[in-house]
Length: 519
Image (cartoon, rainbow, N blue to C red; front, side):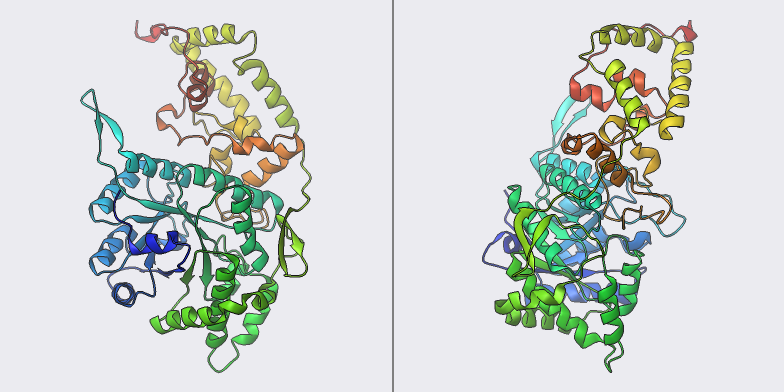
């Protein structure tokens, strides 16, 4: 095992408090990029900041490549924390980038799905963060692959991969979706957490309580975004997806910005108080970000935060920014203004669906291996699969039915039974197959706010109505197999080709017959 770098050492030590500083490199080779490199030199020499966190095309707009900039930061003596956004990269690009980072000694990664592009660029979203974490785990263990008919093994890497999560969600369905997916991320190898942006002390504590209650001792960094009024307005309107600013906080910021310094003093003071509260709650560190922050600002936040930390309980009331009718995972402790360890009662009412009832009945009848007629269905599928004309007719019939019921995208590797019979490929702009991203607001999709509900919010309602929320805890679906695109998912299941058949160990019924179209 390689020696821990300064970021890992500090974050994993219960006696230390880790500070990271988020940098946005911007486009081109201008001043913004030079500032990042200068801040990296300062961090390496000063020791106050343990990692320079480099965003990866934030907002979906092009910027200096986070990986390449991370290599430069490393050469200058800073410790980079490179964001790995999966919006712009397919699985080949992700693996290639990881090889390059490993060769340069860059180990720290923040694996995220990424915002949907704000420009005409084609989004990729080939992998979910869970899939990328599984790849990183295999690389750290020594990746095995096939080469010239032989199995080869790569030398193990030493990546230290973290993930993001938002406890600052309003609806029960959104909040549970975040925690269900966080559990899968941790199971897939996540080694630390950075919370999304929010200013609610109860929600901040909620994440730590959830980790403790579920026996997942993974270090978490609290996100401290030094908030200007202009940025707060964008976050309040969910124009920066996943970041939560309440109306109450927005009004306070509006008043502060009328001060002679434009509200900067109040912003920095709030950040220092957040630092103190985060340390008191039990976070292992803070992730500081904000437009135009200087080294002097970072120094002030850290020093003032340390000074305030002994009296952090008295600062909790200053971060009481609940969302109207917002759901909390734990009951309120009126004395501290935080949470008790007792889970709150569920408020959401599930909604049953005729589509679910019909689909579940069909699934149990035709696609359940324990059904007494399953062997007959499978042999029939084998015959159809070996006949070109019937195979094409089967695909037509399947797509016709699924298009009407589920708006089927024809991926050939169906995950409907795992998502309450809602198609994540066609109905989620990011194609999230294993859980929600962090961008929804009040139950609406970040890409179509006010128009389309988040598919995972809808799935939560369906599964709750049928008492099947445990389905969310199942084995994550693998990345989409593009080799099955525009083929019959029914036949792929019966013939052992799709992910469900492989998970069940389902074998095809003998060798398929030759394709008669070539005879």
